[in-house]
Length: 161
Image (cartoon, rainbow, N blue to C red; front, side):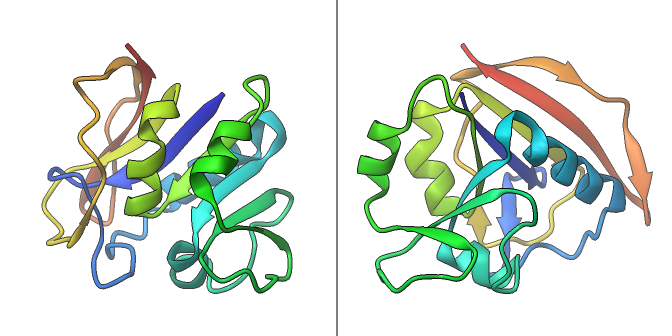
């Protein structure tokens, strides 16, 4: 199954100027690491996410797929130059976590079975947004609110309707 995992603000914002919003939520980081290790630990991301969010370092103990137009090898990652082909050929019985960025989320949403969304309360003045998802997905679980550094958020899981 293909799953997205993302943290977004009230306006579905997920990044500003190529970087994650300054919320630094330790429990969310732990949740991300735990979830992406599940189901075989395979993650798909765009090159901007690899550079900006991961600082050019693949996630440990996972197979990292990086989408880019540049076929130059990336140490510790599998380079994907044709995302539509990669998605078409991905085996249905195999699990994959899509971790960003906005363009990769938008291009893969229609093939996604579950969304793991950390809903962060507030508007963080983002300029990159997660695609509209609520009309096509139903909420199946939601954590109690968590507050860190004055920021409140919940972990939500949605399934394709």
